[in-house]
Image 1 (cartoon, rainbow, N blue to C red):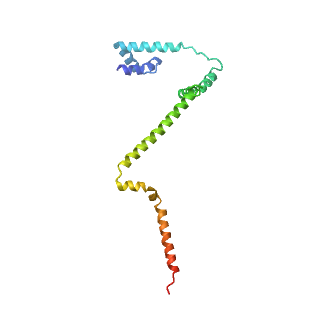
Image 2 (cartoon, one colour):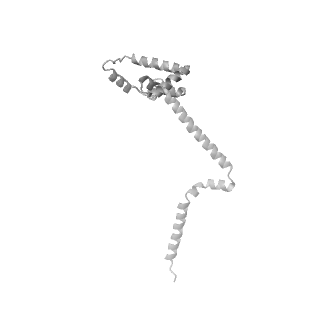
Image 3 (tube, rainbow, N blue to C red):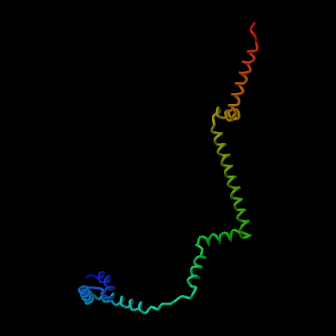
Length: 168
């Protein structure tokens, strides 16, 4: 028998639930092993202390007060968010926070516009002569469909006017 097997059999030994052969093995192992004796003594002391345990009844209503208080408890993150909201809604902090947000917003728009202008200027300097001329006439290119339709209408008017001449 080893110490682990001995420990597992102690409860059954103390309650008298072991066979006579297993009880003899346990007693023989206790004689041979000082550790086994110490384990048995510690287990007996613990068992004896449990026998001295006195039931204490809680106050009437304790359980309902306990569950009510537990239900009212808020998680840590909810407490944190409430404290943060209290700080933000403070008469001093709120205007400062709004001003900071406005500064960040204006700065981001200014930065974006500046970067777009720089990018456009860089792109324009890298254009060839033909591409630059096309950029100057960008309005014409954007309205190409309208111009094409106007040309078609002029062609139609010319054809109509040719039909009005009679060949004699």
